[in-house]
Length: 307
Image (cartoon, helix red, strand yellow):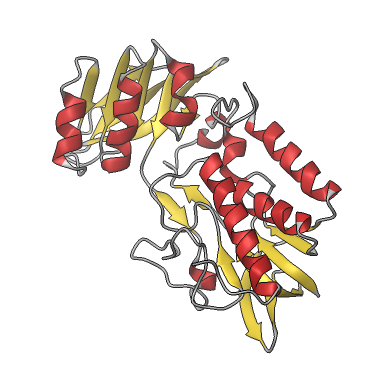
């Protein structure tokens, strides 16, 4: 039996593992795909403290090497449920089950994709999801932003400060984000808008993305728009339903927990992008991982949660 099982191998999960290991706890990290989570989609990361520039894959490898050196065990399996037994928890995966005294759920989120041919190949090579992370790479260039809600508008505002032109692509006849954000964005002289237009194709060259094709949803008329990058902001998808018996979910499917990262189930904690929060960055995920791990250690040591 492990002291702590961490479900998820992104920055939150690996930071949680590191802090728990440094506190003398035995740790198993269960990750269903590859370690690193969403940050592996970023070819260059320049806003992580202590690093001038690093790729998401390199940072993920460094985090993984660090927790392995500290003694973490890892399994590439998908956690399907957590069962609460007397004095411990049982994490059931698609290959078996594992027991621990405490569990930290750090399942992250996945970006809602456009579903277009070739999209996966262009992620990190023309397609991005985060203006804070990748906006500087498009300074003085032309970018498109797919989406019309608050997230898309906020991304576009940041990009409009750097890019030569920002082209908004909304498949509805109107933008759904707050009017305040619309007023700020559409006052910018370098912002162009297309509404009631569906993205129908990604145009590629040897160097990556060279543009997009859109179609009018009423007439069907198609148009090619040259651009250097496409920021997709059509929503995030948390994958928390298998653990809804352990922690409350809000209306969007995120764990309804605060900065203490605890849940309604003693010995179960959450960390990272899977919980409700305003900012989702590598640094904030790492912060959650540290908080959750230290809370789990207090629980294992029989100490009361911090006030």
